[in-house]
Length: 298
Image 1 (cartoon, rainbow, N blue to C red):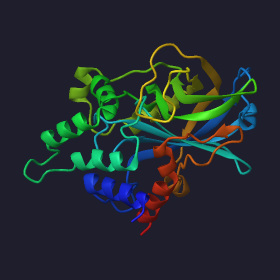
Image 2: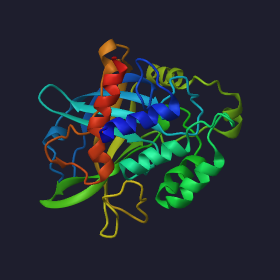
Image 3: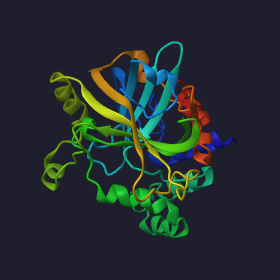
Image 4: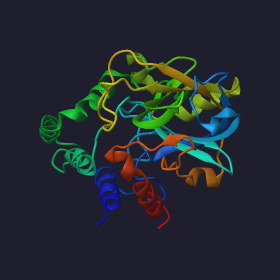
């Protein structure tokens, strides 16, 4: 059994297997827009981002349940494709600054600890506690979600790569994480809103936003400091960091086309000038995405 098969089996084991839906981030919708380059990018050498590019994207709620509540305390995601026929940079970003696992085995064990217990009707708290104790590097991801209210709209969420990519800046090789920073600022639901909002509201909220015009994020590099861990996406980067704005992601329309719903945002598709992250989780992504897609079409 391949590692990709194990990962998707673990997701299906925790969330169930739902025909025609992704194993992870099952609930979502597609949108389209454009990338507008920054007037200056501080010497970052990514030719694709030197000119305006089309953008295809998909917003989603984390987890593998298509009917999950839009108020659920899990990550929000954006799959993003920048570019066209000649070159595409594909990204998969989430609302938590760090990931929940740094290896295939930890990914599988994390989900196994949260698989529904038939006697309880949900995850067994003792199993979750035991996993967290044995795997303290996974706790920052969980603590972020516990302390951060779900977004009011996808347009008011901040999205992170978790992975540290390689870039050339002023002819020097550096590692940097990517962030999509909403120009409107991040806004979470208040306790009162959490109590009264329906379980389905995020698509309607985006529809209303787009009726007033495009929504925007700054695409930024967060450049690693010498002490930062660049090969483990579960480790937070503390302190001040150099930030470089690459440009603006502008989402303009909903996209309900069939092809758009099936699109796979495989981050192995890199732009020229971008080197793949060196961590173990990134190395698993492409095969796992392909495995998930094959099960959707079975």
